[in-house]
Length: 416
Ligand code: EPZ
Image (cartoon, rainbow, N blue to C red; front, side, top):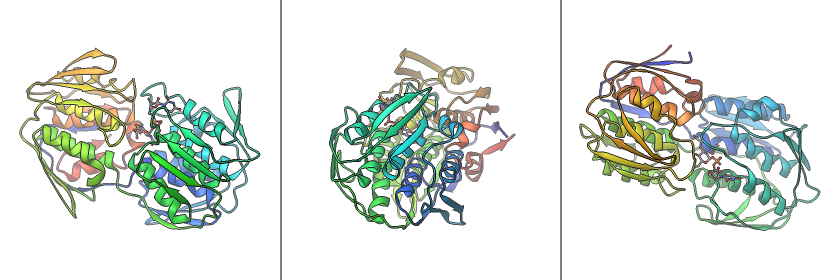
């Protein structure tokens, strides 16, 4: 079932429930390592990256059980500090296990982490911050060995608000002796969700949601029952797909407050957006208006939705300009969209100019990364005729069941 077949050309209509957030679940699951008791993490999405994190936690000695409403993790018996090669290589977010494990054990061995092929993705900020907190690193045949006799607080300033580095610093900081002051922290809602989980376990963190975090380390953490918020990127994918097909959709439980930049972009594209307790309701014009879009760290427009905007604007009225400022390899779908008749020019490796066409035609496409893959499915929904998207394993890393969700919105989509 690695391909998705789409019979396009129909406007999305109806309502769909938005799954729990991938990028909040993963560091929260890693954080359960710091709690020497059982925690219940509700609303974790059933996606490949969460399954990988669960098997990583099991390999370290945690008792992990899926329940109907969430995942129960008992980390009282952690017995290993070496992460299995294959699991780490395939998943960038295994990197947050570094901060958590170094908080739990005094020595950690892991491979250089993998993840989507959307750019170089160095880990220098993670390493340098942890060094400032008393961790030493040795590189050995492709793996990293980290040691710490005494993890301590520090004053750290990040040159760029890296989400993963912020999460690692928070995870190590709650276990460190003394206070950690982090300037230039990422403000993404997933960082706030991690802090909220830790606070619920008994951690003392100030400045949550701001660019300056103060983590008072060394407090005892207790098991808790925590609900992961809805996934703003999945909600945004469906919202933008609705705009691409000219439909009207209710996104149940969509996290409206975290989606202001996306809702602003939707309004610029000519969509009517209303928010209520139920979620976000979007009603799209026939074809979207062209836009100027620049990705930026939160609260700016998320890089994870840039590909979907690009796909949608292939049918825009006019010429859109899209600039990517976070990852350098996020225009790999352009070649695929051209197979459908899209008119996209790359002005530079980080800037695309999209001249909207009246119709896209179905084509055989290949997904090469998670969000780009979802964008190709959106393009398939907008096209006349049949589209096959191959390589959907990437999409299942982040979307529970994109085919089911689009079918609920009336689309003709099948996994093949
Ligand atoms: C997180 O990745 C997300 N992943 C990504 O989502 C998301 O695109 C990204 O944040 C930006 O919002 C998870 O949460 C699991 P960064 P992360 O560190 O933490 C550079 C998705 O599709 N950098 O904020 O890896 C880096 O190269 C995924 O769900 C360094 O130079 O992103 C990039 O240009 C994909 N050195 C920028 O910072 C470092 O040490 C932002 O990266 C770390 C990062």
